[in-house]
Every structure is written in structure tokens, then in C-alpha cells.
Image (cartoon, rainbow, N blue to C red; front, side, top):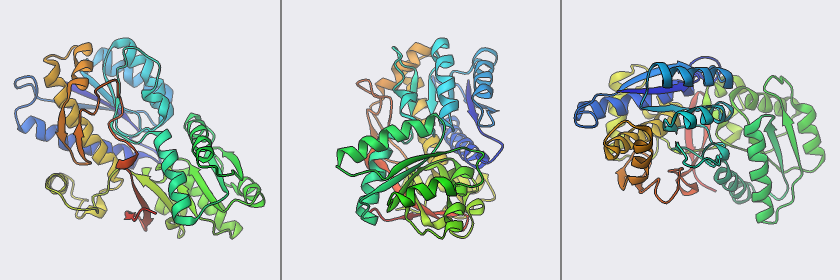
Length: 363
């Protein structure tokens, strides 16, 4: 039985795509070793590179669905790619499982029935958490927004403004920047002039790194609280020595408290991938952890469905009762119309130390 994966396997976010692939692979190995699904059918992962490009993602989705006949499609490292795939999967009635992209509209997509399920952060919950963390940790009274100019940035601009309004916090300003920008000092200068005492940042790896480098050029040591974009690749290298000034959200860290499932997954990762020798080498951990739990939940959904027919599998997700996962113990994660298995209480905070992502305490 084929399981499809569409993700960035090249470019600045390739490390994240590989992390998703590894998490799925470890979970599939476990499922197959235990006898597979549906009474003995083994799972096979079929991957395609979307190069973080929505058009390529759509082409790959059509190929995997119609030519490869995948039972379930995984994908969506980037929110624009995931949103582009949603109508393709919906039309084909193939469940689409998202282990990374956080755009709220991916699962809140207005379709009925909804074939999209996510084990990842959700923008509107992340935005609330970012505002709370900035206020608690840095005593932020007048934050400024610095956002990538794409649908993901737009999704978070709406959520961050709502979260600030909910706590009565004034906004210094909201600035956009392009993925191709190599200098963001103009936008940052306007935020500094407006009195921003903290920056709330939403951007992917390369653009977020340019924000840090621009802050360095300005000599502005303002705290930066970020969505998890920096975790998606070579941020520590690209941002330079002050990469650690950015605190960003995560759903999991292998450097956190040990557990039997964490130890089992870490042992499997070390055995299969020679570059992993310690928890710090599992980078970005969220890609591995989200994908691992999502694949194990998908296997349960397939067994609940009793077939690979798309509508049955969709109902199978809703029928999952309990799963003791890597990130948490899931209790009916997709029942009652829910399509997001993780909530704000499941988030942790982290920053870079060199090339490694390390957890930090909540504010």
C-alpha cells in the first residue's frame, strides 16, 4: 500500500523535508514490523520534491493520487503549497495529512466533507502563544510585526492582531518583507521608530535569517519571538552568530524529558541514520515528531476504515479513540469535527545554539 509524501527535498528547507521523511519512515518501519495494516498489508513511502513551489506541489499531488494510487497523501511543509494541494486531494477524495504547514485555512478550509487532517501547529493558536510569551518573558508592551509577504504571513498577521487586541496590547506597526529581500533594515527601522519593544516574526528560514542580519547591521538588540519558520533548515548558519536571539515555537524536542516512546524512536533514528548520534542531532525535531505521530495515527485510521477507500479512511480518522504518541497521548484527536490533533498547550519554545535547536523554558 503506497503512502505519498510531497515536501521540499531541495533548497533552503530541505532539512525539514528530510526530517518529515525520516519521521514517516521510522513509523512505517514499526507498522510493517508489527504486521502492517488491514490484516497484513505493508506500507511503502513514495516521495516527491515540491521545491517549496505550489505549482510543483499540485503536479506531484496529481501524480501520486492518479498514477501511484496512494491511499493517503502527506505533504505541506509550506502553507502555500499545502493550500494548493487541498482542492486536489478533496476532489479525489484522498485523505491529505499535514505534518508541518501551520496555516489555519489548511484544515479550516470550508469543505464538507473535509479530507484534510493535521498533526502540527496551527497559526491562530501559535499567534496567541507568541503574544503571551512575548508579554511574559520580555514584558512586551508595544510589539511590532515583521512578516513574510505571502499567504502564511497574511494568516498570521490576522491572528497576531487578534491576539494582541484580545489582551489590550497596542501594536507598534506591521511590516512585510519578501522572500528574496537581502536587507530588511527599512522595515525594521520603521518599527523601531514606532517604539516597538519586541518583534513578532513570521518567516521561513532564509528570510528570517535576513531579519537577524539586518538587526545586526542596525545594532538593534530587540527581542525576537518567532513562529517556527527558523527551525526549517540552515537558520543557524544563515543568520550568523546572533541566530540565538530568536526564540521560536516548536511542538516537540528530543532534548526534553525522556519517555519510552521517545527512547524507542531515538534508537531507531540512530540505527537508520548515521548522522544522528544524540537528541541534538534530530533537527528539526518537529518534522520527525509530527510526521511520526501522524503516520501512526494514519495507520490506526486505515485499520478503523477497514479499507483504502477515501471516504472510509476519512471516517477512520474520526474514529481513532486513543494513541500514546511521541508528542503526547492523543484522545479522540479527530472526533467531533476536529481536524487538528495538536493544540496550544502542546507547544514548547526553543532557540538555536550553533546548528542545534535547544529547548528554552516557557516565559
